[in-house]
Image (cartoon, rainbow, N blue to C red):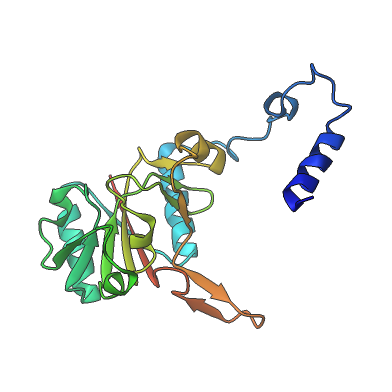
Amino acid sequence: MSSRERILGRVRRALADVPADDPPYERAVPRDYLRAHGERTVEQTVELLAENLADYRAIVHRTDDEELPDVIMRLLAMRGSDQVLVPPWLPPDWMSSADATRVHDRAVSTPHELDKVGSVVTGCAVAIAETGTIVLDGSPDQGRRRITLIPDHHICVVRVPDQVVSSVPQALQRLDPTRPLTWISGPSATSDIELDRVEGVHGPRTLEVVLVH
């Protein structure tokens, strides 16, 4: 008997006395938890997002549509990135002022090639104020997951207030669970048993979030 057969056998025995009319799991489990903690205005929600992003050591910038290309240009110049990785459908005006060479997200690119690129610019799917989390879902303005994990510098553009929600439950309502979701709370970091923090372990060492009103 294989391990698979043993596991399925245990499941069948556990379910043997379950009535046929037993309600399905989705209805049997009460979901009356809070959708958000406290009432906030749109402005307060955005401020909470910015505060929690900064608390996670992300660098937060604020701008509008007109100034966004110049902000991205300055961030790339300050970083010294002469190459920038871009998803296939990043709005072209975002990069209209940048001097860096665009490197397009391609399936044939190897991790070694992507590691040579200094920065990546993407949009996002949603931003969660209560946790300071940015969620990517692989949409055309975000590209494949790996392009946001290999370069050392990630510039992520968040549209305010359309892409900002208060809580994780509110974010889940907007997200498709079948898509490749990447949840980002600040730059990649880990710590050892002595709690010495090391950044840039599993992804970018620097995360810059541009809130575009």
